[in-house]
Image (cartoon, rainbow over all chains, first blue to last red; front, side, top):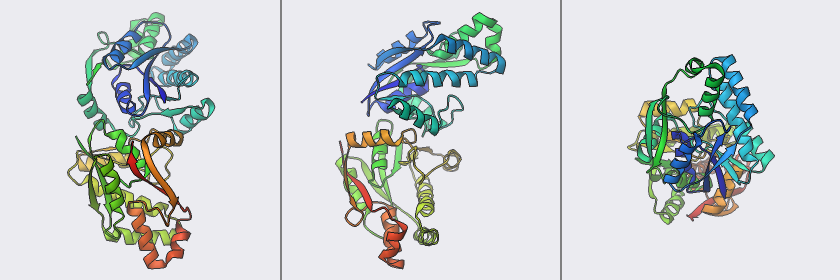
Length: 196
Length: 196
């Protein structure tokens, strides 16, 4: 069975890839609005473990709406949820038997409710799986230490290879660097450079 | 990291074993009140995949209370939840770094809430993982077909190798066979005899 996993080269989606590997033929899929080339980080990470890789084009109008929302809210949570939902819909409409993401037990966002999962499955005739949903923060941290090579640092130096980086870039372009600092106060970022 | 998985030789806990195998040194643990020897089915299934196996002694008073509850309710759901919670507490108090079970997304029972999971982890200094929580019924069915050898049939012929079988036996002893039919109207049972 072919599974497409929404992949950011972050710790969670990388661990999800390892969790699904015994059950599916996994392709890592990085969603992009075409705003930056940050998805290249994800391709490199995928290569280190011989995972198949492809990009998934998102609708640029969704990026604009998400940035509008961030500016109105003053925080990124709802905007990221909107984009994640859009990315899952696009992925589900493709040619995979199953799709997945790195959502975990203690995540506030992105979150996919049981009803949303069922709806995705019924409308698209696919299975949606979120293998980290049953793992808490402590378990995830220990598995990340054991199985992934992670680089961490300030967000200026480290770029996550997903739509979040593109939303930051778009926000900076529209409102300036200061707006990014305001909406994303957490400076610490990390991404995965390899699998053990 | 050593993980003890509550194991019934049912489809869910068998699939959970395969899901956790890449991340942990997994021991399959079958909980027993000492009422029957049904746990032997679980030991045999564990052997077919070279999983370590052990039994976990439960408190017989919990079995009596669970049967009281079944008789009062007329259905087994709450009683099984009580016993599952008791089994997780006993397992968490043991010498594993992490514990797990086969709970899945669409399960009504047993169910372990996020708060219960956190409480187990904090009080016992272990990780609790439920790797099937992020999988729906369709995905599970397809993975079971691909990876497990399952025997199904009427409950007279097929015995699940866990505390549920023991609760049935205790109910039959106290109230007669007819009470078992009333409390457990679903005659179809299945258990796993091998891993692929």
